[in-house]
Image (cartoon, rainbow, N blue to C red; front, side):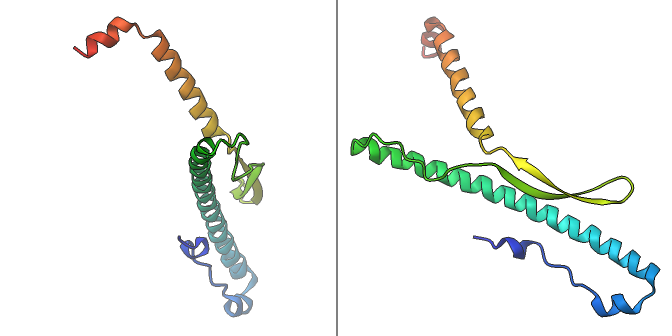
Length: 140
């Protein structure tokens, strides 16, 4: 498994050079560093989001696999390996005037499950509505 922090290298802070330069140059350097750091944070946030989606997919698979054993062993209790609550990811935005704003973006972990449930319902309706003559004709 990849280490998240190694995907986006840390920026070196030019502390000694930063102090020795004049204020205008320090502002220019500082703004460039803020821009680069905000991009780094946003990349880490996107990577974290992907990792959470992967985590959820693995948990879903574990739940499905464990259901097989529960049915086989006649356990009625429903098993969920993971509980999902509100998830917020940090994001850095920059306003038109150049000001940076640190905000949170919510992640709706129930969306894929809702989409899958909706798709299953649509497929069931389609199968029920499909005339049997169309099914028998396709097999001939």
